[in-house]
Length: 317
Ligand code: CO
Ligand code: CO
Image 1 (tube, rainbow, N blue to C red):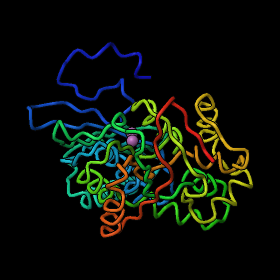
Image 2: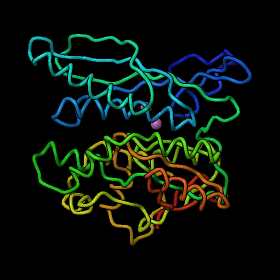
Image 3: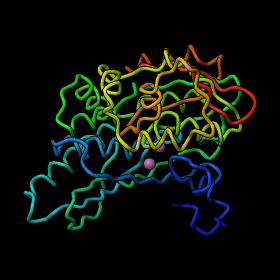
């Protein structure tokens, strides 16, 4: 979509629409840059409070994925006024406010419209030192790829929509509600080489952004990738959102799978996540320290593969 924009001329735009990054970065002075991002979507869960919390946590994530710290947020709401009780919108906003409080920021304003389908999200503004931006372009061959949440959220929410029972549903709700704050702060402090969050394009799609942005290849070990409990079974039963299958199709030109990697695992690797984990390219000598610091902050980091020299290709075995 953004390729329809005219080229950016302002030299203070440090990260713009061309680089497939998580947020835009605008230099205010040699020491300070603003980070701006927005995200909103239709409900992924029935409970309005939880939906607001998840939508806010998801929008905030793109600030942490740039190595930045959020300053404040504006809310964006669509709501079918007169068709659903307006108290539900209040619950959505209360859930978002709870997530923002955990992020250490306030919601300072916003805009809402009457719309047949509810939608909610935030526009978040943050700050970062211009030299400390963690983009998709900084990865180097040899970096270890670390993922901070298990995969399968899109598959689990599809199961929820279809009224299926699976332990993956509760596990997904817990992961979606968990802020990426601690993970982002640890990665920023450790100066990892590249950082992104795994959302709509799935692990493989967001990894592709790092691979292409950094001009390296990647090698993933499927057996090392963490999965939500129960998601393997759902994927084997074909409970996979169309968007996740499309993610995989869109990437065929740059993927090389070992024959042993089954189709259901390929879908999970491409599964669209809502507020998924951070994916970091960590220089090997800092890996132990990063994993230990994450753990001290209550976050598990899973090494799932590495960046390798050579062509832009993702190999999965
Ligand atoms: Co992102
Ligand atoms: Co986004």
